[in-house]
Amino acid sequence: MAKVIIVGAGVAGISAGIYARLAGYDAVIFEKHHTAGGNLSGWRRGEYFIDNCIHWLTGTNKDIESYKIWEDIGMLGDGVEIFKPNVLYTVELDGQSLSFSRDIEKLEDDMVAVSAEDEKESRAFIGAVKAAQKLLKFGGGENKPTRLLKYLPMTMGDLADRFKHPLLKRFFTYFLGEKFGALAMLIVGGTFCSGDADIPYGGSVAAAERIVKRYEELGGELVLGKEVVRADDGKVIFADGSEETGDYVIITADPAAAAGRMVRAKMPRAIAKRYKNKKLIRFSSVQCALAAESDKKLFEGDIIISIPDEYREELGSDRVSYREYYHEKDFAPEGKSIYQSMIFIDEEKSKEYISLDADKVEYKEKKRRIGEISRELFEKRFPELSGKVKCIDVWTPATYKRFTGAEVGSFMSFLFPKNYIPLHVDGSIEGHPRMFYAGQWLCPPGGLPNAAKSGKLVIEKIKKLEQKHASHAKAAKTVTAEG
Image (cartoon, rainbow, N blue to C red; front, side, top):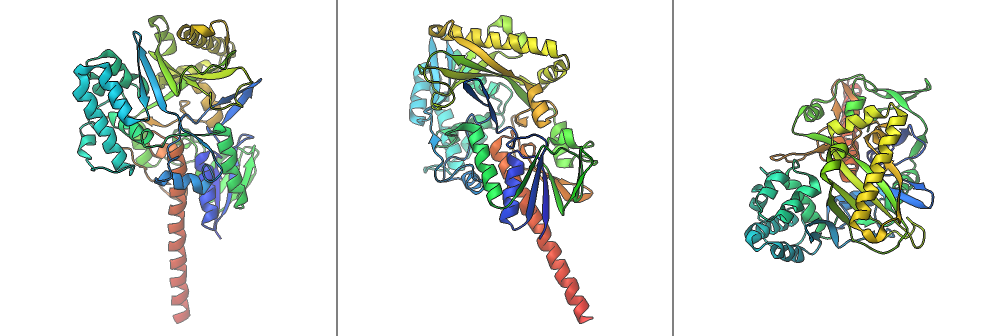
């Protein structure tokens, strides 16, 4: 029986471990931290729970492939309750607002109501979302992929430029940003409007606990607090000098951080090509948790508001999104609420935070300042909460780098541009036939579904290698017997 060593107990690592056990292999996962889940995490600050990861989860619809993966690894399935929001996000401008409704007919009517002048373009966009639904195997109707191809050469900024009304322009640029390929918007919209992209109750930590439980029930071994500093074919070396041997090694760290360091080999060419592609932008975010002395439901999903000019350079963005957790009654004490702000930032800004982390006093002051601005903007938008909101935590790309080792503190992988179709690449490491990469970095823009799928794919590759080895061994035995 083959033994598979897995470095990292994030979603990719646990997924690989589960599929290894389902294939009949021994599996052991080593994680440097004292908790499993990777980015699929959360933590408490006093009476409040902060959820780090699941904003919406692709694959909650039972009719698509990714649900089967979630079911296999225990993320979803019987007994796991799902929250289905009616709104993905809302943008506002000059007293008007527009929400991305789950009801696609309502979304179309709302867009047309904003601007009759943009009716033709609004209906064309809705038609493309419906085409995405069909392509993603949601719903019925005529399959018209050509409606999607029209948007492939566009960025979100290009898509916004097709509209005249400023609110409709903001509706597109404020969600994913101007540089993201417009195809992403159609995929997200088609997914959400098809009864997918929902949120498991209990959030990220509960989800992490479920997949760890599934892995251990299958007989997999999980070793926490054990840092791997060197990996090679069939062997890993730990920070304490001890070693572990096996038949295969799977690395789930950011290849940019692992290659040439933990792994004494160049990054696989297919993966390296992505890091060298200037159009594939790495990104991260600065996030704040806000505690409010009120349990009034203010909005649903995310509300994205404009950052005033005087703060844009300091924060590195023109917008901030706020997320509510009204559906999670255990995330805040009775009579109170928790909200989280997110400011997307580019790679260069992310590196600034990582560099700043070296000066603990300055870094702490920077976080305090961000928390104050986040609170101030939230209270300004919701004046009924004035004086009732406080910032209870701030986390940055430096936080992600410390926790996951991602080179620039990314929590996802690459922002994919126009004229780009994101596909999984092979994580095989040249010159090391028994060592592989797995994780979200193998398919932009990353995220939980791509991480989980990569874990499955790498075990499928190992199964083929094992079958090949078995076949060769059988042939050799036959030749020996006949000789």
